[in-house]
Amino acid sequence: MTVSYRQPGVVLTDHRFTVPLDHDAPSGETIELYAREAVAGDRAGQDLPWLLYLQGGPGFGANRFVGKPSWLGRALKEYRVLLLDQRGTGSSTPANRQTLPLRGGPAEQADHLARFRADSIVRDCEAIRPQITGGAPWTVLGQSFGGFCTVAYLSTAPEGLDTAVITGGLPSLDAHADDVYRAAYPRIERKVAAHYARYPQDVERARRIAGHLLEHEVVLPNGYRLTVEAFQSLGRVLGTGDGSHQLHHLLEDAFVPTLAGPALSDAFQEQAQGLLSYAGHPLYALVHEPIYAQDARPTAWSAERVRGEFPRFDAAKALAGDGPLLFTGESVHPWMFDCDPALRPLRETAELLAARTDWTPLYDPARLAANEVPAVAAVYHDDMYVDTAHSLRTARAIRGLRTWVTDEFEHDGVRAGGPRVLDRLLAMARDEV
Image 1 (cartoon, rainbow, N blue to C red):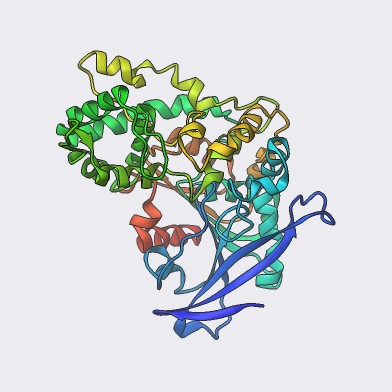
Image 2: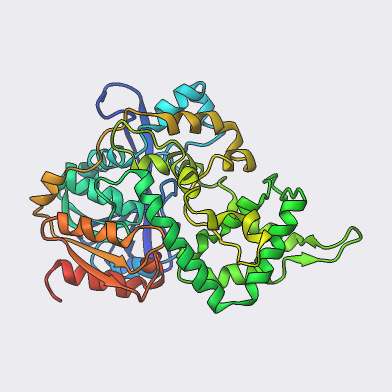
C-alpha cells in the first residue's frame, strides 16, 4: 500500500518493493526496498517522466528533503523523482550491527554483504522500474557512488535508461583499490596544504590535539575511542565545499582548562563523534573497498596498506619534527572497527570481506564503448574522493559521454550548486549547450 502526503510545494509518496536478495536466484530469499516519490504540488496529477536518484556512499540512504531544496527543485520542474534507499541503507532492509547477526555468524554476514554492491543495486532498479514507470526507461542521476552505479547500469541494462547524469562519480573501470588509494593520498595532502594555507593557525592547533591524543586515552560520549589516527580521519570533510571551514571551527576551541589540566572540551568531543561515527551508515565501512574489487585479488585493507607508502601521514613522525600533521580523507581502516562501537561487533565480518577473492566485474568496457544512451558527467577538478584522471579516462571509454570539468565546486557540487549544476548537465545531455 502506498501513502501520499504533502510538504511545502511537493507531494510525497512512500513506495515499498520486494526484490530477490540474489537476483541469480529469483525464487530464493527476498528483501524489501524503500523509495520516496516526489512531485511538484502543482503537477501532481500530470503524466511526467521519471528521474531516479542514486545517492552517494556506499551505505547512505537517499536524502530526506523537506520541500524541494537544492537540485530537487530543478528536477521537479519536469520530472517525478524517485529517491531510492539502496539495499542495506535507510529503510531498505538495513544492514548494521543489530540486523546482521540475523544472518548468522561473520562468514554468513560477509556472504550476505557481498551482494550489496553496484551490480545488485542496478538489478534492484531494473526490478522496480516496471512497477514505477510501466516499463518506460527513466533518467538516472547518480551522485558519487551513485555515479558508479550509473556506469554499472550503462554496462548491464542500458535499455532501462533514457538519460544518464553523473555528478562526481565516474569510477575507474579497471583500477584495483590499491591504485585508487595511491592516487588518493597525494590529493588528500594537497587538500590539507590548501586548508593550512587558508587557516595557518590550525597547524599548531592540530599538532596540539594530536599530541594530547598520543599521551591520553580519550573516549567520546558515544564510546568511540578517539585515537590520533581517528582524529586525522576528520580530514574527510576537506573534500566538500565548506569542509575546510567546518574543520577550522572544530579545531579552534578544542581545549578547556580542568582540574587535571587541559582537556578536550565536551563541545569538541560532541562534534567529533558526529563526524566520526558510522552508526548511521555502517555499510559504508563494510563495503567501501569492495566497491573497487572486480577480480580474484583481495582488497586486504588497501587504504591501510597503501598509507604506509606515504610516511608523511605518520602522526608520530610529524610531531617529532616541526612539520604539519596531515589529515586523511575518505578511507576505511581496520582500526575503525576497534574504535567505533557501531562497528566493533562487525570486525570479523570486515576481515572476511577484505580477504574475499571471488569478486566479479562491475563494468563492461565493450558495452560502454558502444553506448547509445545520452550520458553526461560533472567532473570536479582535483576531487578529493574520486580521482579526476581516473574519471576522465573512463569518460573517454564511454561512447558519447560528455563531461563538464569544473573547479567551481567540490565533490558535493550537486548539493552546493543544486539547480545550476543539474540544469547545465540536462542541457548538455540534450545537446543544448
